[in-house]
Image (cartoon, rainbow, N blue to C red; front, side, top):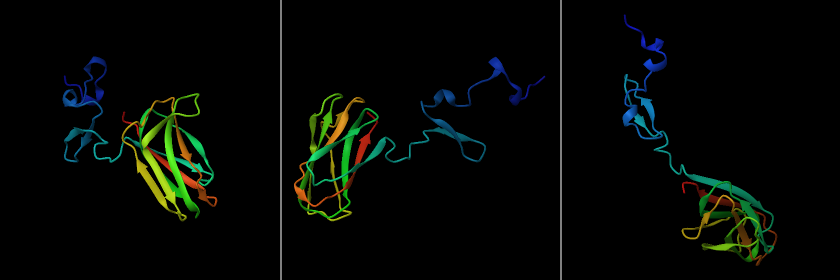
Length: 164
C-alpha cells in the first residue's frame, strides 16, 4: 500500500531534494518547469551589507559637533553632507570614533571635507578606508570648525558597512 507524499508524518518526512548540497542561506527557487535550483536570494542585490543613517545638523557654520549612535558594529565607509542653505567662507568637517562614556575619540583620518561657499543643495562627501571601524558601543562624532558665515542647516548621511 502506498502513502501519498502529503500524508507523510514524523520520521517519514525528509528534507527537500538537493538540500544536502545546498549552501547555508540558500533557498530553493522553482524555475516554473517542474524543477529548480538552490540559490542565495540576495546574491544579485547590490550593497546588501550597507546601511545609511541620516542625521540632521542645525548649523554647520557654528563650531561644534553632533554625536551619531551607530546600532551595529560596522565600518564607516562614507560621510555625505547636504547643505540646506547658502553660506560664505569655509566649514571644515572631520569625524571621530568615540568610545562609550567619552566625549572625544580617534579621528577617522580619511574624513576631512571643506565646504567652501556652499550653496543650498550642494552635496559634499568623503570616503573612509582605514581607522573607520566602530564597535557596537561606540559613537560617531561629526565635527565642524564653524569657519563659515551664515546659518547653514544640513543633513548628514553616514554609510555603514555592517558585514564586518
